[in-house]
Image (tube, rainbow, N blue to C red):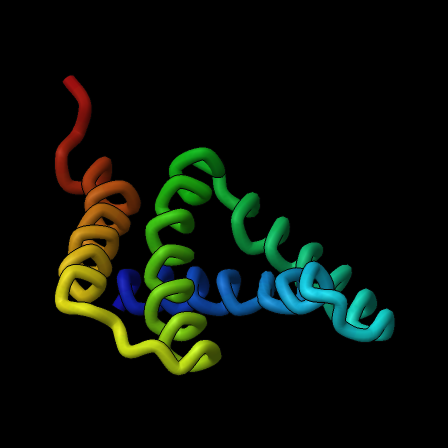
Length: 108
């Protein structure tokens, strides 16, 4: 259950960055408000842990997945290639290893 909760938070964090991408593409100024809120949400979600570096690194893997699956496929309407799916699987495996490996394998 902890894995699902953590992965869910990462997906929400990745989605919170999307308004910034719209601003970079010359969209209306009013999008600045949700961008500021999403940036604050991003900082809060990734840095509320004792191991913020680990959380941020794992988030990078989730961000890759969101970029490929939701942005590429959902926004740009480009169907992901088999290599995209394989990469997403590798990234998510890495996220699980980074976030939960230290709990399973204790340092000597």
